[in-house]
Image (tube, rainbow, N blue to C red; front, top):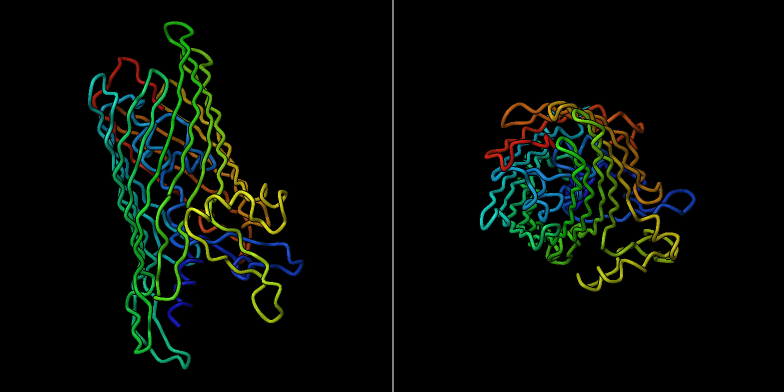
Length: 393
């Protein structure tokens, strides 16, 4: 019974449809990859949230702790803090939300090193548990959270690397009680490894163009278990990103960015057995699952290509004070079918920046995006300017 509640919790986190949970549609073509603790893959800040969830290679702020910790030695300031509140399934329930706080500090010769950290908390509100006869079994407050600690270092004028360690706690059936229950909170440990390359070309006294590239291997770590008989993969992910910033003139500049992501976990296999779920997740070790994820899709290479998620985004700044952003996220219809357009704005005032984003309503019914018709806001504080001209990014 409690497993059913855990599954409900996971579906609330990701907006997975009933088709995805069944792993198949009437044509037998949908084969969605699912993992535990998918809240780790929810975009936590309004800036990237307004740009189609790109963030691996765009200019760094405190939220680089999530996107690519290797970016932080390239930050314009010595210290930074970011805070974001995100309502979840806002159109359906009022008490599900994601909170995120991140910060960093640079140190060392020429500030070429940085330490960073973040806290992410996901609340699923209140759930009333009942047995098969409708008798109450208690009221729970399902919740998940993670703590990060990161270190990054600049290796050369253009290149940096970073490492983050993470503790994950997932309690989806808190408050549920039963004499034969084997359900418990899940715990896991993971790490992120990032690389960042950024080169700026000075055009004149007021203008400079920039090209950046980033690569991140995130959430590499142990499986997580809610019972004594099963362990699930966490969302191990490989992300690649590029960004290019063009100074149009002294007052205007434009950034274009592209991110490509792929989950490095096993693709569900066809059971080939009548009367059972069409697909099942193979039992593999973490390393075996990661290495095999590039060639284990039942549909072959064409299905492997459909497992890549694509984000594109644009950001326009005027006088390094006012920003307008837009983006698009694409996921193949057989792998989750998330497709959405995002827009947003940013205002920079002295040491803090206020960013806002809005996800344009998409889908309907069970296919509706959990963030549809939702506004998100982030506050980013930056301290101790390293140069007289602030990029405003």
